[in-house]
Length: 152
Image 1: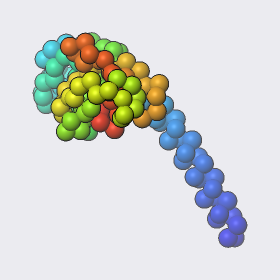
Image 2 (image 1 turned 120 degrees about the vertical axis):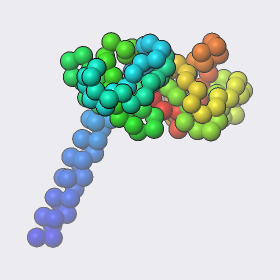
Image 3 (image 1 turned 30 degrees about the vertical axis):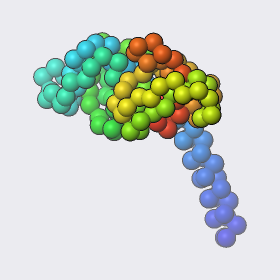
Image 4 (image 1 turned 90 degrees about the vertical axis):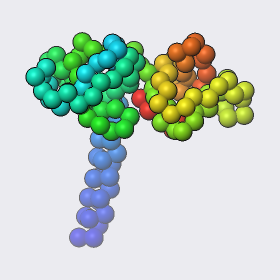
């Protein structure tokens, strides 16, 4: 009986790992494509308005229903937005008090600039584990640690 419980635990752990990898692979990040997009508490223009977001605001789609998407933002808040207000162009938002953007994906490389919390930058790629290549809205490009931003 003891062997069965160890085997069952092992199988459940493997299934759990496989499922968690599947879920992680399915994360869908988008950005807001228009300035002043309204976030609702239900998928309807008649629903309660929760807040307004600005252009490039990154969101993660949780539910996709016809013309609406239920999204999560960097603070974990869930809201509904019209899909026509979304773009598949990806952006990240700085979640650390200050994010350092380097010339290369290495903390010893040249520090190009620092971005304050809530600054939005365009996501370029994530080819280097632990780093995201980003472009600031002013055009500067570099690498930021992935733990300093949300939306990647």
